[in-house]
Image (cartoon, rainbow, N blue to C red):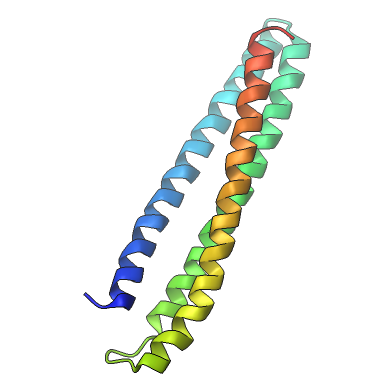
Length: 130
């Protein structure tokens, strides 16, 4: 397997993980939406407001995941342009922008993790009644 093929395989794995994260964020938003509706129905307006703030953070997570997907798509597009038998110079020229996109993905993952932790803490606070 060539270096470029290895990067492509790693990128496919990364895309699968980002897709899964998007699904999990959508499920969390759905659950929070249901919890807000239930809190409103039983008259817990303060809880509903707090959970709505959690949903806002989940929306930020979803936006961050969308950014991750865009950067990985750009990296995949760059890799798709590598010729079948690339010269070392072509590999370097291709991998430089791919590395830059993947660096953005790395930074974005860190941001999403921070938001997930924030949403978790906010949810725990709501559930404890604070």
